[in-house]
Amino acid sequence: MQAVCVIIPTLRRPEGLTRALRSVFAQTGLGSTPISVVVVDNDPAGTARATVEALRADCPFPLVYRHEPRPGVATARNAALLETDAPLIAFLDDDESASPGWLAGLLAAETQTGADAVFGPITGRVPDDTGWAAAYLARFFGREGPASTGLIDHGYGCGNSLMVRATALPGPSPFDTGADQTGGEDDALFAALKARGGRFAWAADAWVEEFAPPHRATMRYALARAFAYGQGPSQTAARARDWPGVARWMAVGVAQAAVWGLAAIALTVVAHPHRAEMMDRTARGLGKVFWMRGFEPQFYGARELRRLQAISPSTA
Image (tube, rainbow, N blue to C red; front, side, top):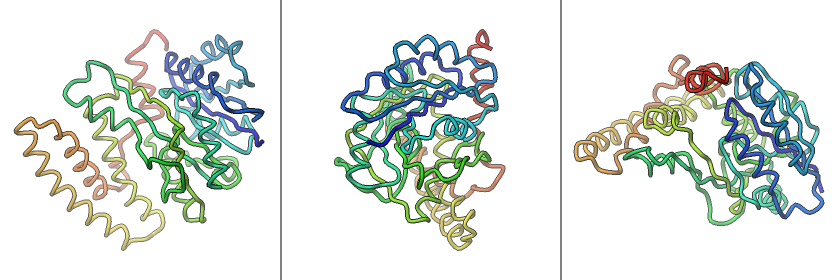
């Protein structure tokens, strides 16, 4: 069996990191597969070290702590990869909790399909006091896919994924650090993989839960993310210098923003529960139009660190 390393980047989420690690410790159905875990702490203050050390005795696998003081999602993932030579890499976020059969499900799907990158479903969880948009936000932070395991034609986000290192993660720093503050480094990685003829798969049984923290479980945050997701197709075409493709995606975005924007206004007037979905689609359309540098929302790195420091300054 090929060795697998589970990578968990973390930034000032001690409770989430504890939950994520304990869910990895409880994995079943792995047989004799060699497993290791790398936690990369992206807080300049190194606040995750104590959490990792407190749990080390409970970990049934080799557990590595890596401190990467430069805040940035791509930088953190690249730093974690330097700590392992495992041929298979699984990614779990520090706001996620894996089901007991998660890793076995990803591995079985990779074996069945021969894919370079495998993704699993996510159940979104939001705080109880989220308000009228709670159902939408739970879906937003979740991930749905086919009912059965098999090949698919596109990638998803890095959280809850398994990748063949040689093909999906080439070179010492496969994640673009230019996306440290904005995110989207996984979109660029998967677009390049697809261009090389790489294959993607869905593992229907590899469930995780994602627990959205209160400062993210808001319409403002979700719509900013929806806008950034909408930017993706236009930005991918621009990186390939496919200017007709950029123009096509911008035209699609104008149409989407117009149609769904009117629908959002109408549903908001009557306080319809589906108005959040219409706002989401409008934001994605606008993202396709305003894809240029300067319009990119910043969710990670230094900006996220400042948000978390404001929420819990005692851990600074």
